[in-house]
Image (cartoon, rainbow, N blue to C red):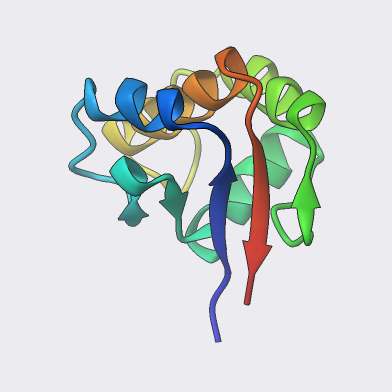
Length: 103
């Protein structure tokens, strides 16, 4: 069974997400979720924060966004996918969204 992470947010986050192109991310970022299992190694490796949590607070989402933003590449993920993942977390952080884990 896999891990999905859903944005815990208001409608404005979905509007902001819809204004970006996400063609490489696994999940449905336009609906506010990613397959966390596919990205946990990248997120945890670059930030020290695991996606395997019931709830990730907005403060931790912001920390993830800030720490991941310095990377231009990361082993095991394409540059395009990394950029989209960074955009996903940046949008959530800008809108004060948390993440709910489901597995």
